[in-house]
Amino acid sequence: MPKLTFINPHGKKSLPLTVEAKPGETILDAAEECGARVGHACGGNLACSTCHVYVQQGYDSLPEIHDKENDIMDKAFDVRAESRLGCQCKLGDEDVVVEISEESLRAWLDENPEARKKEAVAAGSR
Ligand code: FES
Image 1 (cartoon, rainbow, N blue to C red):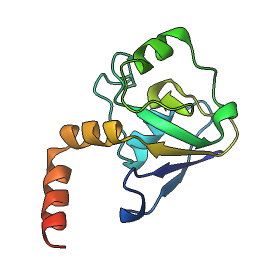
Image 2 (image 1 turned 180 degrees about the vertical axis):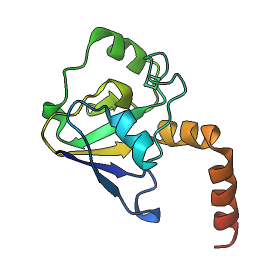
Image 3 (image 1 turned 60 degrees about the vertical axis):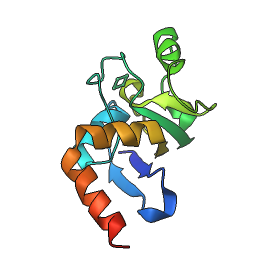
């Protein structure tokens, strides 16, 4: 089973989260199962770019990017060579490391207002 690691865009503020994933499972599905903060405003239907991640390791083990994913990626912020949409990336047998984009984290916090509140309180007490 491949290991999937999520790195928070705020880097050192929180440790990376590594989980065992199932081959064929998408990065977004694995994120939802383990609570990694990957947004998904359209529910994984390839209609937003809130599941945008940067693949730092294992890029070649993922399916090739297709035209529709490229079209949606045109709407994303801070797109890089290693950018992918988490809902379109089914895992193979190799370990994969992704950094969650700022865009995706913001979307996740919008979808989880309680977590946003807790984070604001914690930031205020530092
Ligand atoms: S969740 Fe909307 S494109 Fe992936």
